[in-house]
Image: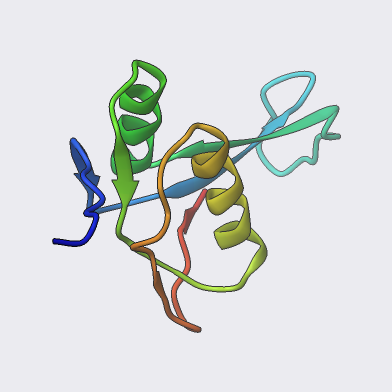
Length: 100
């Protein structure tokens, strides 16, 4: 019998990229405000749960669909850095993570 990869948690759902923009104050209607800082974070219910579980020692894999765009690459990097296996990701040219 061949070797099998066994996962304790398999994620089938949303991975997201959240871009957070910081401004000096809440903007008054019909005005503009300068962005003083920007941060990018991974999110989405499935991806967040997989990162948390992997950090706690569970063997996790993500089996969602991702494309080749910048946000998909960011999701791959963040999940991989957290120890989540990506061998089951479906590659689709039109697939994108949720981006907010």
